Amino acid sequence: MSDALRFVDVTEDQLDAVIRVRARSFGGLAAGDREQWLEDARVFIGDGRYVGVAAGDEVVAAARFWDFEQWWSGRRVPMAGVAGVVVSPEYRGRGVGSTLMRGLLQRAVDKGFPLSGLYPATTVIYRHLGYEFGGGRYRFSFPAADLRALGGKEVAVRRAGPADAERFLELVGQLHERRRTNGPLIWPVKQVTGWLADEDNFAYLADDGFVVYNWSGSDLCVDELVAGSEATARALWATVGSGSSIASTVQAYISPDDPVHLLVEHEAYKDVQHQRWMVRLLEAPAAIAARGFAPDATVEADLRIDDPEIPANSGDWHLSVAGGSGRLTRTQASGDVLRLGPRGLAALYAGTPLATLRASGLASGGAAADLDTVFAGATPYMLDYF
Image (cartoon, rainbow, N blue to C red; front, side):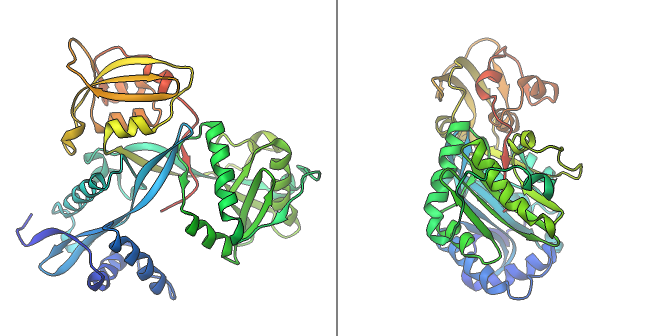
């Protein structure tokens, strides 16, 4: 890379240049969206989470990362959610994107994030930097009439609004802890309040669950539905399905393991939308310590990690898992140990079977077959695109 190109923090004065690069990457901002985009960008800038590559004084590439938490086996893990990665066309293919992302990774490490995630426009650059597929975002479609017929009339359901944001987050936490969920994001209460204040969203609350949905063309679309019991699940899905006289189809962003698949009379339509997301460990010991594990499984295993991009992750480690918690500590391994690069480590963290990692060359050596027992769990999924 030329000496004139350097990694920088994006400043407010450079946002017009970022918008120009963004237009060449994603298309222009929709009418009326510019002010909201600028307001959001200033938050990232203020927290040192908007970075770029500059040629002289002009930003030619940029990216930001969200301050998220993500559920892993029912525990909350801080996660840097990478978004808005853009490179000006004349600088593509010159290593600028890799320079940008390496700087971003280091910034996320410096800010204490043990984990990073993203939706890839292309997998090539992100795999070179140690990311691997962790899960998916699934949208299923159901006949609205099937949902309307689910019943649940004995459950009291009321309209919800911004004042219910904290209760929504409380219910989400209870569900994901109990089910040891993998993948969903945890949004700050401010964002949830704004979501519930949006007049285009229709929100309903029961004692142990809620639903938020909206119109998507002539269909209805469920953004999120949480239910702590069968009766509440039936009531909330039926609430959405009550629009069947107008909307013949309900789209829903849900887990592939959601109970609604077992409640409806007919299976979901075949047109399932599936977007895959990637994950990377930024600080391996912290990521292991924050994650939940199968509560009845135990393992003691030596690992050898080779992480060229984040050398602090490299070396010999001992993994100890018991009682639903894990620890990764430095050791001096001897003999044939399990060897992983950052991609293999990320995929293992997300529950990919060790046999699959071996078959793809992402793991080698050692036995450690019982790792599948502790990392296995519910299918990782997200509800949100960022």
